[in-house]
Length: 211
Ligand code: TYD
Image (cartoon, rainbow, N blue to C red; front, side, top):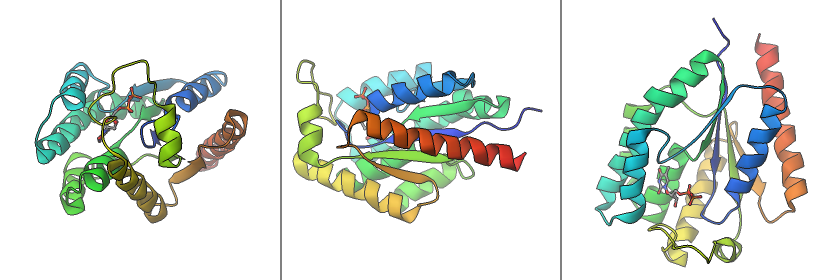
């Protein structure tokens, strides 16, 4: 049986520069001939992508939003994440449950115990092996949002929402230091890439040692 793959999630407020760095990590791991599955939340499956359309564009009750995020996640874990990890592939996910804590919990003030209950229900035993949190001050993130396209429901939120979202991300990073790596996303792309490589090598080395 193949050794279980590693699960890496990428987080940060909108405009933190996540997409650029995910592309780098994909290409870096692929250059070592690693089998990777690159996916995203909400989304990652046909049903999840349909839910993403609703989540990013329709107004809904805060709890409906949280429940749909976790419904999409349940499908994503069953159809994509768990099968890939079992096959020994590495899963790179653009957001995972930390985003629900940050956006629905921090940004929208949903009771964190409700989110914990959903987390326990949907993935009691699964957590990312590594979570990169790209952290930037709000003003920097706002300036980076692509002004040439229509902003989705979350991107249209105000500064308070993003301040609270960022604060909850940082609180979780402090709570789970063993898996979080907070990356100062105001640094140059080259500096960030060097840091990402260091963390990825450490994760790969921990895999080899465990064999
Ligand atoms: P995002 O990941 O920023 O995609 P893109 O880079 O294509 O814009 O968009 C997903 C949005 O969904 C983002 O604003 C955060 C939000 N979100 C939540 O509010 N809760 C969640 O649990 C997840 C996974 C995402």
